[in-house]
Length: 168
Image (cartoon, rainbow, N blue to C red; front, side, top):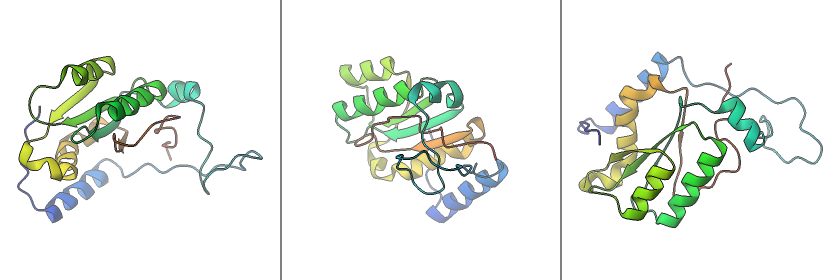
């Protein structure tokens, strides 16, 4: 896994994230939809999510990053998270923060099957995973067009989570 200096205070981390966002040109904003189709229940100012096969053709790229942690997550929940994400965004980069040590055989199978990159979380920092996400993104943010951080414990995907991110 990657090694990072986690000494900076939270305020310093937040300042670094803000600076990285400014350097990268800011957050991409979603475009407002025209009128929703009758009978489609969507949130205000959003567009209906494309069907999974459309999402893969339009929004799928290795420059989209999905991040989560497997620390404290049951393998069955992780399988749903990874399997559903790969089904709707087969080319995205998946980065999973994992407990220290070698993965269990079932975990290794999931990591291989879904082409997941991993970063080991030091045992004493497992409760500081948000800080670890920041440390990773501090240097890697320019490598990605969109970043999703989601809970692997209770998330399943029905369409590409990157479909709403568009160029302004």
